[in-house]
Amino acid sequence: MKKSFKHSLPDEFGYFGEYGGSFVPEELQQIIDEITSAYKSIRRDKAFQDELSDLYQHYVGRPSPIFHAKNLSSKCGADIYLKREDLNHTGAHKINHCLGEAILAKKMGKTKILAETGAGQHGVALATAATLLGLKCDIYMGEVDIRKEHPNVVRMQILGATIIPVSHGRRTLKEAVDSAFEGYLKDPVNQFYAIGSVVGPHPFPMMVRDFQSIVGKEAKQQFKEMAGDSPDNIIACIGGGSNAIGLFTAFLEDESVRLYGVEPAGKNIDRAGEHAATLTKGEPGIMHGFKSYMLKDSQGEPQEVYSVASGLDYPSVGPQHSYLKDIGRVEYKTINDREAIDAFFSLSRQEGIIPAVESAHAIAFALKLAQQGEQGTMLINLSGRGDKDIDFVVEGYGGDYGISESL
Ligand SMILES: *Cc1c(COP(=O)(O)O)cnc(C)c1O
Image 1 (cartoon, helix red, strand yellow):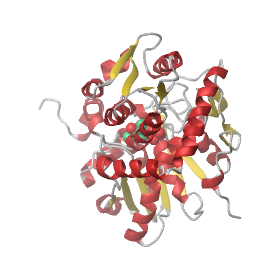
Image 2 (tube, protein in one colour; image 1 turned 90 degrees about the horizontal axis):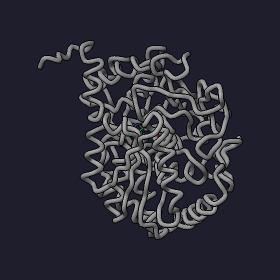
Image 3 (cartoon, protein in one colour; image 1 turned 90 degrees about the vertical axis):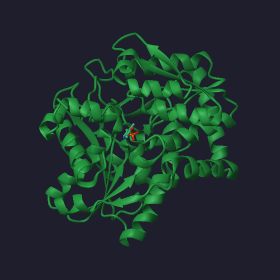
Image 4 (tube, protein in one colour; image 1 turned 60 degrees about the vertical axis):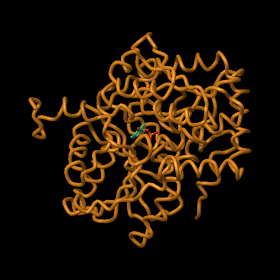
């Protein structure tokens, strides 16, 4: 039985099985429908594809290499390969979809792109794409995050973006989403809301996936050239799910490849508010305009979530992942803060590569699989570099790894 995941999903209303869709106010639906039809008409347009490929190659630095992590492999007994999205311009996979969204916005005649940001990673990638394409850029960010993520705030300002501080509620990501949404509704004709992962109403989960699927397309060919076969296991961390689906898509139909998505178990997976393991602990529901697994509080509202990796703390997840969980094509596992930090130091000290704390969740799970006796090949998506995390990691955990604070 051959299932055509890639070409049949989502359906024309944006559903992956029962998940996805578009649950937005009527006046906004009209604007979103315009985005859907603009995207559908340009996705096969040669000029659009050429412009995007040219930027991937000469601006982002694609194809990103696959690196055979032999030191780590010999330590753990499995055979580990890393897809090096950390080597992209701006240091992570997010630039892949930000460029796609920015080109689309420009082709639609929009003059400004906007988004919220939590840790600032999406904001920096979007500000970069906006500048390159000559678009204005507004980034909504909670005041708490502005203080915490100062270097990224400065980066966005240097790139010419306007930071709009959000001062209500807990002044973090959720409030930033609400404010960005309000800002968008003020002028949806000239503005384009560039969603930062495979979440939100249709067509965003499909569109962001399509832009990220370059990662798996390259990896499939590169891995074959290096190892002569497909990988036995593919592993990626899951926040909204964009880096994971980007790598998985090329392998969905090859059932001999085991696919693993790794969610953050945070401090305690059994306590609401101390993790962000949406697929593991959540239930189906609707938030932010789409249906998917979500973490709800007792009122049915989005739960408080937490992870040491700020790029992973989102109380919902891309709808395609919910579908892939239900049909059993992808296994979703969890890794806690401590395991992720250990993996952060392992990769740094075995291979000389400092990973993003988000990506360290995927590394940690690979090491765990190896410990459980898996000896096959593992391809891990190294979604980003860890420069952004070094101060925070050393402050919180450096002592455990022999890093003296007195230097
Ligand atoms: C944002 C981010 C993630 C999480 O987002 P996904 O949409 O789940 O990929 C993971 N890794 C890095 C480095 C990030 O910046």
